[in-house]
Amino acid sequence: MFGFLGRLVAGLWWAIDLLRRVVFTLVFLLALALILMFALHPGPSVPDGAALLLRPAGTLVERVRVDDPLGIIRSGGATVAQTSLPDMIEAVRAAREDKRIKALVIETDLLGQGGLSKLSELRDEILAFKSGGKPVYARGERFTQGQYFLASVADEVHLAPDGFVLLPGLARNVSYYKGALDALGVKVHVFRVGEYKSFAEPFTRTGMSDEDRASSVELLDALWKGLRERVATSRKLAPDALNRYVDGYAEVLEANGGDTARAARESGLVDALSQRDEWHALLKARVGTDGKDYRRIEADDYLAAVRAARPHEDAHVAVLVAQGSIVDGAADEDSVGGDSLAAQIRAAREDENVKAVVLRVDSPGGSAWASEVIRRELELTRKAGKPVVASMSSVAASGGYWVAAGADEIWARPETLTGSIGVFAMFPEFSEPLNRVGITTDRVATGPLAGTLDPRRPLEPALAKAMQLGVEHSYRRFLEIVATARGKDIAAVDAVARGRVWTGETAHRLGLVDQLGGLEGAVAAAAKRARLERYETIWPTGEINLRQLLLRRLMSVVGPVEFGAASPLARLLAGVQAQAADLLRWNDPQHLYGHCLCDAP
Image (cartoon, rainbow, N blue to C red; front, side, top):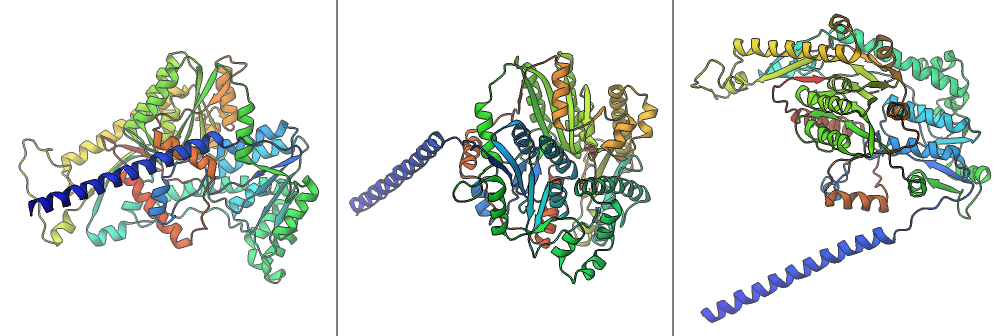
């Protein structure tokens, strides 16, 4: 009996060991195949007389997130494609002087959200490309507002015969939860300074405050005016013609028998209606053919070829990216970690080849503590003799502005949302809904405030007073930092602070920003401060493990995975999920936040 059991156990062990060796061998062979694929993957070459093809997919971002393919599979493919704005700009800029590039082709069908300032920055680079005499062609199956804003810069714009150009204008829709919270018996205690600091209003109101409404109207009007003027200029339209299309869309459609594509063409928004095959035939005639299709090279391949041929310089300007909400400690792919970014800044400061630092900020803020950790590292970098320039992307508000105040010089796009100089704290109280279901809480404590920061208990008046005093102190500290950085007195800063959000253009007029321009201007300003005539721009990414490196290399070989457009309900649910995930990241040790309730349009 025992002999039989012994043989059975031995057999099972042998089978398990064999399976382990097989799995190990398969993993090893897979890793070896990946290494060989990376090593043997030929570098792209640029054909003479080719068109550079821009096909941005998903959201335009400053830094592309690395998604785990297994996580994508587990989520059923529910991922958001991303395109690097700096890469797009670099490719167009290089193509401007490249004699091998004959034209630029823009296809916008995969482009999702971009942020008006990002689209404007890419658009400006395309205008510079056009100034060299090379043509730009653009086409869309249909155009959303952001897609059309980018495409409208082209010399020739095509639309599918069954497509449309949708220009609804800009809006800001905010969900308010007070009614639901009241029904549940949940209280949210808010402590803030500044009547325009509206981030907490969704938890305490059922609609916009007068201050938030007035500020929002002013912001949207300024941004919309700039968008309309730029589109009208590119399309050689009178502003009134564009206004008639936007404000009287139903009448325009009626005049064109409900044909949306014809309405866009008759209104001067597009030059021609073309099917896909007709579009490719046109490009073959304009650019030339490679035997199968029109001669072209995609932006990613072109950029890889250009970078491989570019000589390396010993002097570096390091561009560090602060993208997402600011949190204490380490970051994930969707946030800015105070400790993580501080470590990157410190590494750049200690790198002898790095002569200047540019901080690219695309953040609505977050933890006040983490914001100060980052700002202090920038200040130490300046004291070490290395210039620091802040470059604002779509949003650099509240904590994002706090961070930028650590720079020698601040650059912003006219469309950037910035300011929101203010601080708040929130504390939820769940004692009433818990009481409703029979859950009560009691305590013993060694002091009046011990154990009081507990959402199961009513907020103690003494603790509420302490939190309000802490918020007021942090606000004064914020004002002092900005006043020192901008060379102003505190009263002057307070007059343009109090949580008010400004466009970059207005912030420049108010003295909160030094220069209007994009990343290229900020990098050049940093190099000038460092007295560099020749330099290389580098993009340090901080610590990256082997798994992330393999994923990046793999994705660079196989190319981006494309997913279908999400339904409106899916986008709504994804937005709610993203907001909830953002709240869960909030981990300021003092529960103090500088965050702006502002999304870039």
